View 1 (tube, rainbow, N blue to C red):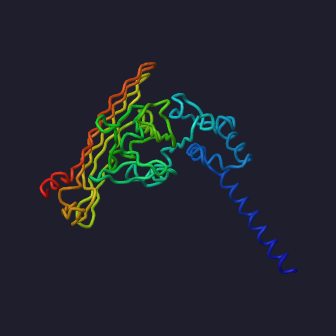
View 2: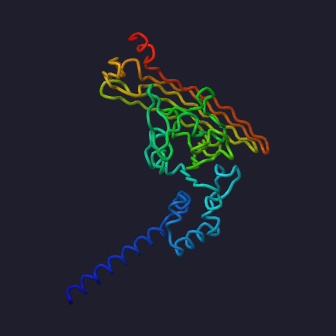
View 3: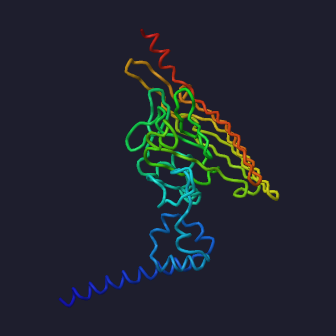
Length: 303
């Protein structure tokens, strides 16, 4: 009995020490580290820790927790006030995740997954429902980028994480605000502003698979603020293969070599923003193309 009491006291002491250590870590954070905390991290803190952080920043606890999002109502509201289930991914989370593609970031969000159609196009699903055919709205800086013919958005080295400041996601229907494309959900990608960049940045990368080269990319982002005028320029160029499979045989016994011709993609995009006081303008060019597999052509030959 005495031994059991000693063991229990030991575990209680360990728990107490753990809590004290965690509290000390919070209090030792610098102002810059506190500003980089996400809303999810803030909501897990105790009241004592929130009071300490709000005092260090000189703001109220309400201001600390009420980060504004626009995607759920088209007005800036806090996540608690926003109608619907809203997820927000900040730049700090994107950088720390080590994501090389937007797919890596969105895979962290509950309910979002990716799949392939019959021609190898990579698309979104929301809560287990395939959404490529215009059922999920994707926006860049509030502008729709679903293409006009099939109302879909292709993924796979299409959007560069290096140029994203934050992502706002409605994990549920948003058609009442955004129209028919938003049946299953809405994804609003907010790119970096001039003040976020404040200079010139370049990113590049190269990848290789076993039987083919994977991708090569080059991107540039520049931003400047002169008095009341803000100018930002984002550009991204990438090309590569979606698969290195040497031999694929379909139901009609037709063979495809994905590492040669049937899985290539190419992306060229520009995003230019200008703001002066109450005036704002933005031009976005999004040119993403994939190499078709030739499935229909080969099927006709078989017939």
